[in-house]
Length: 146
Image (tube, rainbow, N blue to C red; front, side):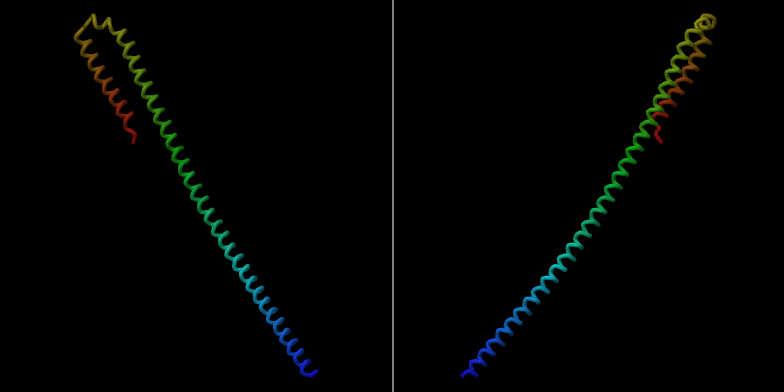
């Protein structure tokens, strides 16, 4: 009986040893699966971080291009506005100068009117037509933006 009890103990010990080995094997498999899951998670997180960085780079680049284009357009518009204002001011000054010249010229011509009124009126009409043509050319140049 002792032999049976020793065999039973040996068999129980072997069963315990094989159960322990099965548990260790299962634990190793679980650890290996956990390591692989961590590696996969790390790889996916790295890919997501890379994708996020690329997206941020693209958006930053697009924003920079848009801001540069808007700034360039604003600068060109301001430059054109300044050029137009300068032209208009020069034209206004030319018109004022022409009016002033006509006024002073009118005061100096009164004695001629008294000598020969018909010739005076004829010359004055010619001069006025010339000035009207000049004014029309100035006005046309104001509206000719091309």
